[in-house]
Image 1: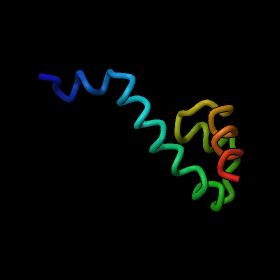
Image 2 (image 1 turned 90 degrees about the horizontal axis):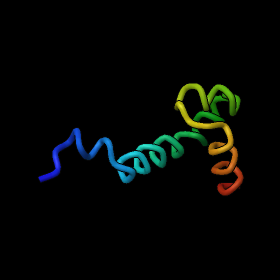
Image 3 (image 1 turned 180 degrees about the horizontal axis):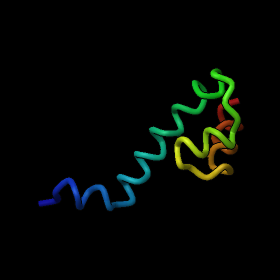
Length: 57
C-alpha cells in the first residue's frame, strides 16, 4: 500500500502541489506582487508563472 511519504515523492503529488500554488497567482497579483516575488514565495519557476498567467488572461 502507498503511504503518504511515498505519495509525496510521486510526479502526481508534485503536479497537484504546483497546480495548487498556481491557483494563488491571481490573488497575489491583485496584491501587487511582482512575478519575481510570486516565484520566490511559491518556489516556482518564473516562466511557469508567466505561462500560467498568460493562459488565464
